Image 1 (tube, rainbow, N blue to C red):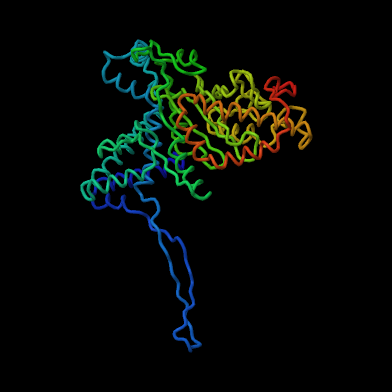
Image 2: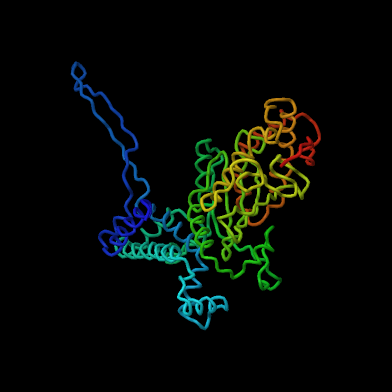
Length: 462
């Protein structure tokens, strides 16, 4: 067992002990008091006295309490369980042989006849039990807190907890009768930049990861069999319906557990994910353009599919913000949706490391290496032309495409399932974006927008 696994096991054992004692469980609802500021003041005893004393004032503030910190672990456990749904179904099928699929029956017969190893990976089973234990422990702690502190306290506490979506937070909201979908973001008209940043980052942290329904329904709300999805890799996804691949399930479970609480969020640039609630291998991503680049504050969308051999091979990624296939925003982002990135095996450089590389690495690489300050230099053979007239003209053309498509286009026709994210992003950053556009207008070279052939500047691409 690794050092990290040992640490998690020790933590879990500690939480289980707390959940079994009401007095200890109440500690979980208390804030952790930390020093906010220290101020030394020299005080003279009297007006004519030369003697003085130094007094120290220490101000404490309550930071996240243990229960709030535990919720981050709960969120990751729930995400991991989403990725292990295939293992859960297999476990239930073994309890009820009549409901086994033909493949499960075949494997069970094979085990009995040849005494081969259990086809359901042992690591999956361990992770499954560990995650269920975390959820059961959190629920037990909450029951003790409710009995000791009362419903009013629990309502206040639940409102302060980090959240994903209605489905993922049902354990915390259903008991209190709270509407978990209500996430109204209010903002004062005279808010300072610091207040704007804080409000934006608080909202983005809550909105960065959610589950949603990406299935295509008919007029009566019914799905086809197998389902179709609002997704570029719909055919690939349908081919893997009801597939049982334990190693892939484990890889996806671990990936989701990390993504739920580690997606980068900042005023300058953020990453948002939407994962299908029944097929966690179907993912949509939105990245807001980094500050100081020609992509600043635009919204860039991607479809991501974790294929049959994930994570031994990289995910499939398609770029969607292309003005209906007419705009090429970057030498590495083609108008037909191809994403050129070494991690994906579509560009020169360090590639995907089987079993070790992650989707989070892919997302951060797109955010930082493709949506960059001087995209002209991404084209092979142009790397030495930093600051040239050609590079500046390329960036000016990118800015025009960004305004037309990644800003106005997304606002006029917000793509599913990011309508709320797009509208809130532009509403909270309206003042900053207005100033940014005024600056861009002053910098513009007046040349008409050209989206074709690498932004109108040729180049062979990858």
